Length: 167
Image 1 (cartoon, rainbow, N blue to C red):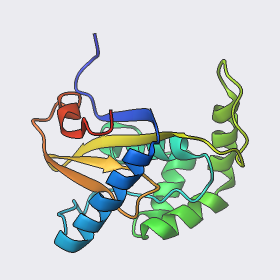
Image 2: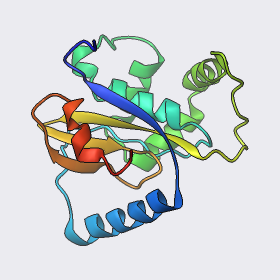
Image 3: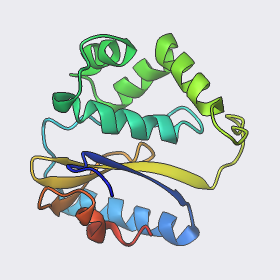
């Protein structure tokens, strides 16, 4: 059983040509039609190769800072420095942050499998889904902006019905 409430879902999935085509059309539609995005949302672009897992975790943690104790440490300091920055400025700050770089390096080699080199071509990708202001957001640092998938009942696991196209 999974404890509730679920505050974030980090999803690992294979990137396919079909998924890439869908992303392009979705992005074009959002640019054409627009979308509502909560001003409280924290989104950072992924500019570091093979760091999608770290970016997904950052999205999950920072966007739930209200229920976490982030009063100290590298994540809190990054948040303080970048709260009023653009997603690209946040990415640049992340690239320059030695504390978070060290945490990323240590966590990426921890576990039972060998971590890929930052230069390796990877066809798997991590993204994060969060709830903010009653809507489900897809947080994918490869994209230029978060995607608002619409209202949720507050149970993020049940919101997976809204993102079945990925699975």
